[in-house]
Every structure is written in structure tokens, then in C-alpha cells.
Length: 205
Image 1: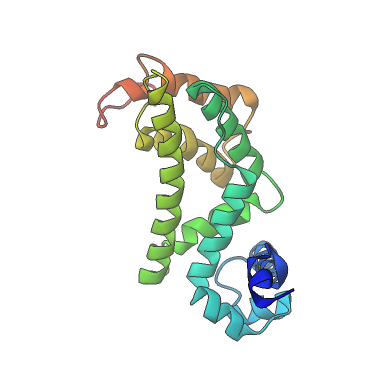
Image 2: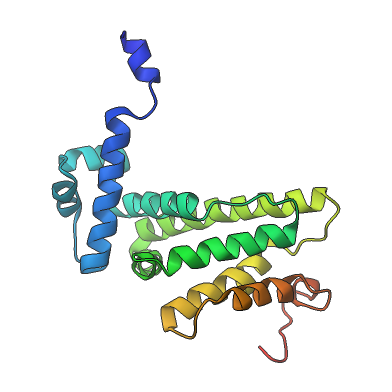
């Protein structure tokens, strides 16, 4: 096979290295927690040179952001069920399954920890949020194109995703199907948060 053919081949060594690095990060986050491992530790665990990691990602925060976003897109991709309620229920269930999995809590804490890592950490966090928000917005735009009346993307974050993460972080209760469906029902209800002004709050919140 010529060089051009090899360049076009999907996967290959680059994909294997990326997968090994992502797995190493996930294991180290679970075992040690954020702030207790370095690029060198990741490289050693993955069996690659640390210079390869710096060349590809630049710094630890950018690598962690890539791991988190890849994990989200793989484990909880944006659904297309044909209705907004169906999309949000499916998405909520996927997110709940991801954050309650073996590495879920550690990765949620990692996302929060990035915010405290100076400008590089904030940049990684903002890029992660921007990418996920853009995907949510596409779901809402698709619903609007079908003639539905979706909430705005910040309301989805506030009233659907934030409660899921808060329950996991503080152990405030299980993420049961009934609980997740209730979040979606309240978000989409005509008198729910999606139909109020951004500054209003539910009296029972």
C-alpha cells in the first residue's frame, strides 16, 4: 500500500495510541483523582512517550477535555427519536447511565476540577461546554423545525442536566426513570420553567 493509501486508512496506530491514552487517563482519574498524576504518568500507563502527548494535546488540561468530550459523545450521544420529549428523555437516560457508571463520578469531578486550573483549565472547560451546548442546540433547532416549541438551551442545562449531576455529586437520591421523566415533564410543561422568564423561579424549587 502506498503512502496515500496508508494516510487514508481509518484507525491505525494513531487511533490505538489515542485509545490507550484515554484509557490511561480514565484509570488514573479513578485511582488517584485529579491533581495526582502528570502527563508523564499518563504516558507511562499508555506505553507511549510523553513527548507524543505534548505534541498531540499540548497540555494536560487539553488532554483531559478531549477525554471528557469523547466519553460524552460515545456514551451519551445526542438522540434523534422524532420528538423533543423523546430526545430529552433518551438523552437524560444516557447521561444518567454514564454518570452512575464505574468511572462516572470521577469524571464529573474532573470536569469541575478543570475550572480551578487557571486559564488553561478554564479554556478546556469552556470548549467542553461549548461543544456540548452546540449539540443540544441542534436538537432544539430540529424540534423547532418540526413545529414544536422547545425551551432554550440554558433551560435544558438548568432544569434537566444540572439536577442529574447534582444528585450524583451529593448523593441526593437515585436517578430513577421516574425522576428523569419528571425532569423532562416539568421542563416541557406549558407552565414549567421553559415558559417563564429566565429570572423566574418555581415556588417549590
